[in-house]
Length: 497
Ligand code: MSP
Image (cartoon, rainbow, N blue to C red):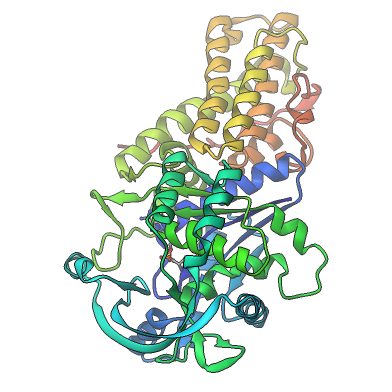
C-alpha cells in the first residue's frame, strides 16, 4: 500500500504556492504509484483547532467553526483547480478525527506516558509552541508575537523516548530523507529530549482529553493524529494496519521536529509503528524569503495558472525545484522552463508528428519498428524515471523523461521525414516517434496529466494513460499502429516574454 500524506494546512491562511508545492509532489507521487498498480491512498486536509484559528476567527468576527468552514473550502477548491487527485480530505473538526485523537491519547495515558504538570513560559501564537527567551527577539522581528502563558498542562513524557527513537532511526535508515534532514532529527534527539505539553485549559477550541475534559488537546497532538484517522484508526476497519504500514509523510522542513521526533515517540507510546518514511523538503522562497502573511509575499496558485495553465504550473514546481534544498520561485524561470520544455520540446514533438502523419500517411499512425534506434533510449528513460520517482526526486524523474523527448526530436531532425516520399521508410520513422509520444504521455502523466491525456487521444489510443499499468505498458512497441492521428490546437502555446 502506498499511503502518502501532506501536512494539513492551517485554516487561518489562504492557500499559496508553498502549500501547493507539497501538495503537488504528493499528487505526482500518488499518480505514479497508481500507474504501478499499487493500492494508493493520498490524503490532504486542514488543521482547524488551536489558538491561531481561534484568533483569526475573532478578527473576522465569526466563530472558529465558521472560520474553519470558510477556509477549508478554499483549500478544497485550490486543489481541485490544480488537478490534485487526493482520495480523502481530512478536517480535524470531523467526528472521525475526534475519535482517533481520543483513542491515541488514551493509549498513551494508559501507558503512563502522559502526566499532569504546571507550565509557565513564553508562547508563540503563530508557531503554536512554547519558545525560549533567546528566540523572542528573532520571532518579534518576524512579526510573530510572543505571549506569557501560565497553565496547568498535561505533558507527554518525550524524555523516555530518546533511546527508543535512536534505536528506531538506527534500524530504519530510510526513515527520514534526505540524509541531511535525518541528521538534523538525530541531532535534536541526541541533544536530549524534554517532555512537551499536550493540553491547554486556556482555550476551548480543541478536542477534550477523554479523562479530563477541562483540558483540550494541544494542536500538534491533534494535528499529527490526522494521518492515523484517515487510515481508519479508531474504527473497526480491518484495512487500517495495511494502510498504516505504507504511510509516507511529505513535509516542509519547518515542521521536522514535530514529525521526526514527537510523532514517532507518540506512536511508539501507543504501541503503533512510526510511519514508513518522512520526506522533508526545503522552502520555496519569494524574494529570498519564506512566504508569509506578515511579509505580504504570498502568491496564489491561480495567479500563475492564469499565465502557464494547470500543466505549466505543475511542471514548473515539479521540474524546476529540486526536492530537498530551498528553492527560489521566479516568474521568469517558470516562463523560460515552460517555453523550453513544454512549448518547444514536448509540444513541438506532438505537433510535428501529427502534421507529418497527416501529410505522409493519410492521418493514420504507423506502428513502431521492433529494432528502432529509439527503443534503447526509451527503455533507459523508463528505468531512470521510475528510479527517480522511487527516491522522491520529481525533478530528476522529469529530466529522465524529457531526455527521451529530446532524443526523439533529434531523431526526427536527423531523418527529416517531412522531406521523404510516402512509403515504408517514412512510416518507420513516424511509427517510432508515435511510440515515443505514447511512452512520454504515460511517463509524464503524473506531472502534466492534462496534456498527456490529450496526446493519448490525439494519437488515437483508447482510454487514458492513467488506465495503463507499469512496467508492462512501458515496453517498447505498445503503439499498435493503424490508429487515426489528429492534429489539434497547440498543446502549450508559447508564453510571450
Ligand atoms: N498545520 C501545520 C501542519 C500540521 S501537519 C500534522 C502547519 N500548517 S501550515 O499551513 O503552516 O503548512 C505547513 C506546510 O506547508 C509546510 O510544512 C510545507 O509543507 C508547506 N509550506 C508552507 N509554506 C511553504 C513554503 N514557503 N515553501 C515550501 N513549503 C511551504 O504547519
